[in-house]
Image (tube, rainbow, N blue to C red; front, side):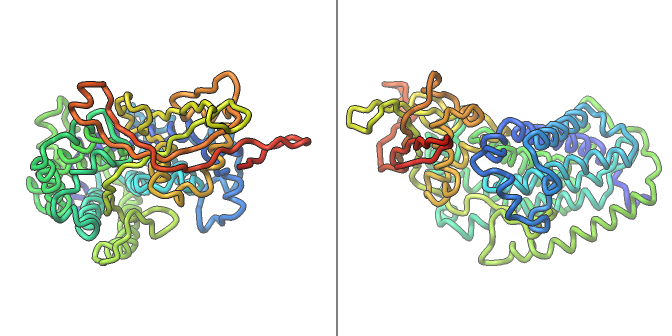
Length: 485
């Protein structure tokens, strides 16, 4: 089976599968911790309402068979448990069919969550995790060498991820072409990290070098992935360095971490063995003919489904982060085709006043990740994904992104809903819920070095406009709630 097996990539597969399992674990824990407020039966966008309008063909999911919050939690916890066992190395030591079954179960459980997650799960890294997770089903176990075909499919995926992101930039915002996008990006990205303020303060020539380095990593190096070693390893190494730079400069959930584990799968044992204290097994066991047949069939399927993403890459109207099938098997990727120059933030406030007057005292809700308190330094959360905080960034760009959930969010605050408040850093109304809740739009910018030195602030903000007028819960004789402006 010399043509089928890649004996020189044992360590790359090990690091890839362990890293992917850790990301799966993170994703399932995010689902466990956040689903009740976002998509639970009493959430902002309830899954039962969505299932009533969506067919299985449109959004294949186990939850079409049955849904309850308890069942959702069971699916997410089971996925987390399987991922934890895989991180510990248990899955790889199982018989080959059992190993494949565990990886398939993780993929199926997460697919079921994504396909009912609605806008909360509309990010490119959801499809990326599903596509990577599907290919991982066919990488074999500790007793079999990794299949050459699957390793090449992983490179094809990494190529589409990087090259797609590069092309969407070149075709999109002119600041990518004149190398000025990083003048703004560190400040206006969805969720800055603890080092973003420092990155933003770098001299402009270094910002231009950042953009040039990004173009090298995304537009040139992807072609090296299909070259012989060590060229492929060098290309993957450049991508790894670039992704680590992105990890340090912002919070992009598990997007960068997935790109990292994909790039690691390109590195041969001759490279990894020089820096790791472990070595590959002496020899692999026989490869079952049925496994060979399944891998060949899956490879053919992926190649057929690759037609649409490949055509999209060549299109001047390139789509960014799109799935061409409801199973998220082969997708197209891209990021920041447009870079915002000004940062806006929606600030949510409540008051205990019974009437809205100029004397009403408004207290601000604090989010875990998104900017709020100007004296609070941004935190590091990635690869953990704060879904509400990310949607608040989109909501600040345009109220259209908040349609369908923002008023429901405000109503949950008026009720002091425990699941919703668990998504926030601080509830200023711990004793009793507010009477009114409102939202205002502010312009934020990073403080200058002098401003930070003088006052300790990380941000400077100025009010722009009202975003949501004050609302309260209407009292009805029979109970229940509705809002009134």
